[in-house]
Length: 143
Image (cartoon, rainbow, N blue to C red; front, side):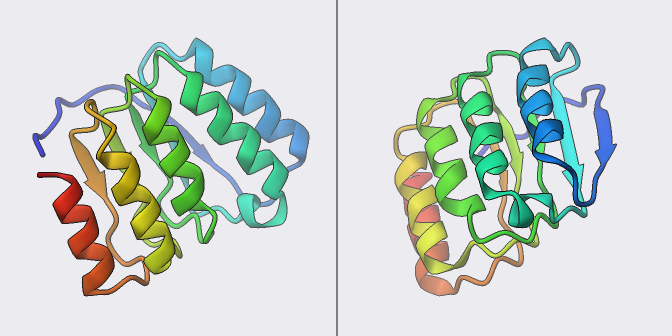
């Protein structure tokens, strides 16, 4: 995978927020000019799973965001949900999912999506609770 250039970023520190916040955030993704979303140290997606689905559906259709950072999201839904994003989104080049709970099944979902995705150049899945099998599947998908 190739590296990516540095870009400006919009930072949002979040904790538990309302469903309305996530719905608004998903809509705001269409308006980003700097190309980056950072949602770190958050557990709002665990407490509002429907909102996480709304967020990822918005991101899948997004055409301006090139970098998403969901470090420390702590959600086992991130693997399957972002697999759907990777299958559809054609602009995302960097995705940081480190320190989540992706697990073996989520790693498999992401690996299958990476086989279809041709735009992602930087993926961070460090510390996600999957072992050699999940890592091998992701590595093979990147070949």
